[in-house]
Image (tube, rainbow, N blue to C red; front, side, top):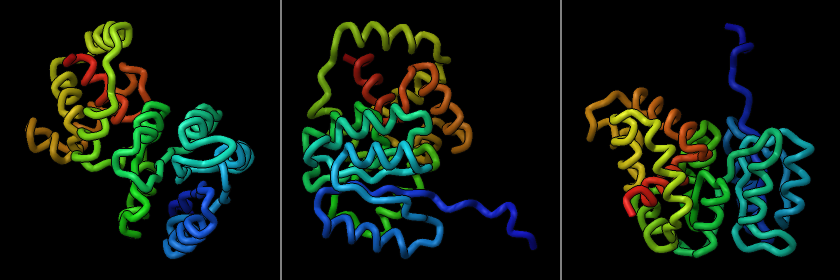
Length: 222
């Protein structure tokens, strides 16, 4: 059978100021035939320069780095003409910088001691447009660091008014960090239908990922 339709590897950029952490992530990526290392960088600015030159699907980005930290790097990477999905890495599960990175457009949140298989799974999930945060982490990060803003809430209400009643139900579940499968079980919908609803919700709300949509849902509930 022809291999013409085989999927191309997911191109990954590793960004961390610790050379030992970078080396470990590089070695891990090499174990998966579906992934391809496009480059590595020791700070956010170098990461943005690399991603602007080389096609990058996913950037694994450390939060605390010199020159340009993970928050600024996430925003800059997401602003590129062909933006990579970003999964942020941190040593702390409640690092306040993580919220900033999520607000800047990060689609994933990973502790550095996450199991190797889970890191590889996260790369695939965010490459496909999903979000890699456990429901517990999503709820905790949003609850602890999210601060409602009156102007943002007015904007959120106007955007939510364009959603169908079912889409508003789905949006409410995102605030609890529920997965597509969980939402499907709760609302008795096919997972593919949930995915379609989430896609339209992101478009109508003008956000780039479901974590940001969850923040909007929290604004609406405030």
